[in-house]
Each structure stands twice: as C-alpha cells, then as structure tokens.
Length: 188
Ligand code: GLN
Image (cartoon, rainbow, N blue to C red; front, side, top):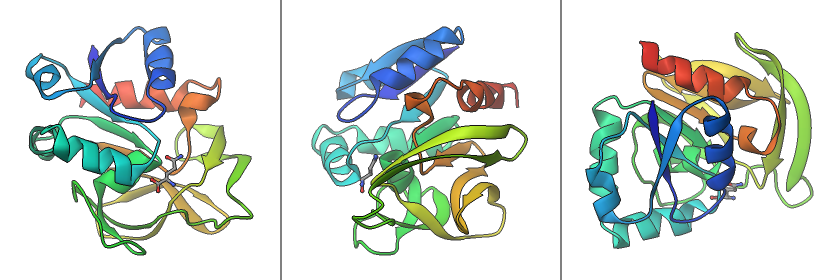
C-alpha cells in the first residue's frame, strides 16, 4: 500500500510515521511532478487551509488532486484537510476541492478553546483520543454522509464514500485505530 501525503505545509510527517508503523509506504507530494508516480491513497494533513489551498494552486497540483479524489481514491483529511475537502465553508468565502458534501466552520471553537483534548466515541472504533487545534467542525451534512463522531453536539468526524474527514489530529496521539480504519478503506 502506497500512501501519498500532501506535504506543502502543516503536520504531514506525523501521518507518515503512523502509516509506516502500520506497514504502509509513504511518499510526499511537494510539487507537480510528485503526482505522476503511482500511489493508492491520499492524506491531506492539518495546517492552515488557506495557505495549503493557495500553494496547491500555485504549484499546479490542485487539478490533479481534485480529479483523483473525484475518481474515488481513498483520502484521509485532518483539520485543515477537512476544510480543503468541504463543499462549503460557512464562515469563509474560499472553498477548495468541494468533494465532501458538508458545510464546515473554520476556527469554530474560537480563541478561548483554541486547543483542547478529549477522549470520545468514534463509530465502530470505540473511545479514541482527539486533539483539537484551532479546529473546524461540521455544521451540516448532506444525505449519504456518515457521521462518525460528535463532540459537544458538533460533528467532528465523517465518512463519505472514499473520504474520511476529521476535525482533530489523530496523527498527534499514539492511538493507531483511525489510520488503521483508513487503510481498511482500501479493501472496498
Ligand atoms: N485553523 C486552521 C484552518 O483554518 C486549521 C487548523 C489545523 O489544521 N490544525 O485551516
């Protein structure tokens, strides 16, 4: 299994470490030519969605990635990555791949709750650690989107077809179950 981790900005190395622990091979996508190699899945890491979105366009990586996601390549998106996938960002005019039919709210927890940690139920996975850093949450989902976790009444994890999107950062905790779930998505 070869996973391509978008590596233009943000917390990508942490994803690679976990995926490698689980036996996957990782490659980094830093420039357009990196998209020409063969790989099976994508990771869109946390970071700053506006910076990542801008860089992906400037580096001419955006169109190909959008096409790969639309064609069904499995993708794990965390935090800023979730914002990049969302069809609509409720509190920002910018949107990016628009492949995930949800409305997200950026920096949804405000300043006071910029960062926090909880342990909470994730559908089919039991209790998992969840580290939130200036996180978005999902305000609403369209039909067909499977809500996998809610914290404090807000949706923080969803699955839609080939896309697994999380408000929080599973790559920053030692629990491997979310990356394991992602790797199982390749089975069908
Ligand atoms: N606040 C960031 C954004 O709007 C996301 C934060 C994160 O990825 N940890 O893109």
